[in-house]
Length: 403
Image 1 (spheres, rainbow, N blue to C red):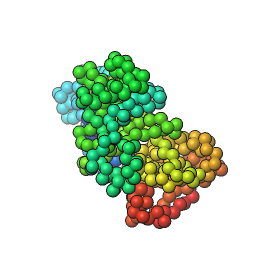
Image 2: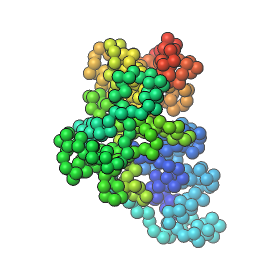
Image 3: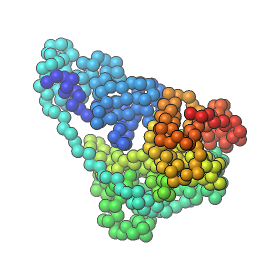
Image 4: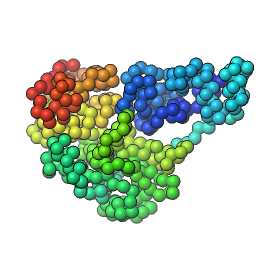
């Protein structure tokens, strides 16, 4: 068998996952930090098992598993193919040495074994109604007793009013005390008995069956703030946690409650987990609506815009512009008095940001001709995000450009 053919029989997520951390799958992709440029945020580097390909939408690097290892280790494609096969036990060290030394043809390999496709033991995501029940019970069980540090961040840094603090909660840990309260809340929602509740929670993103056979949920080793996220119908569609302590370089401060890592494969911490996928997030105006649907990419940015009178779709990341655009278009149909879309991206001028902005603008314009599509603009000196600009008192420095 050809060594390249054998190397490509190994799943690409396993090949690349040997060298960098991957999260997912999420909407058919695994996400990681691109090792070929100074990537600091998830979203641009994607691994697509269905196509056995990877691509970074920021730096343009792409290819299959052999290409990745070749570029990552700066070795020839042949050496990369041999390295993959040896790493995954498909050829012996002796055969690898012979291939490296040119003693045997790379077209004449008898593999020790063929890689087996290990079934991923993931749960099917439940309906939005079930997610709303589970997450409502979770938030109620966690309570809204925020620490002084949390209050300081929300009030002093994010400029929230004290009456808005009840919208947030302290992220709980997997303690017996919390589970007792959580189960009581589930019972109040009509899900009664440990057996029924355990079955119900498998399929709720963030929950999974641990190695001991019990049910666990994703928590944080660091103190974290809980942020409930609602869809266009006011249902809880997801829960987001924000780490309060400084994060290390490359680590995101924000993440959604998701448990796709618990897939029963390899060294996963459990099974029957569930990916959160795209979490629909809509903020309705906190004051008289200005007839504009704004699309932005962050909770506190969306909240700032809602306070200014916008109906807001929160992408939670620039790579989600397609599903976010669908939500915005549906809202425009629901509310026929809408007169424009406003894209509110951060002020950073990067290729991924520009691609997302242009892609979203084109999607909106191609679906409706009567509504203007504009972008909010400001000088970066006034702040990176719209919330920074508004909270710093520079709202009058914001202009709009037609796209």
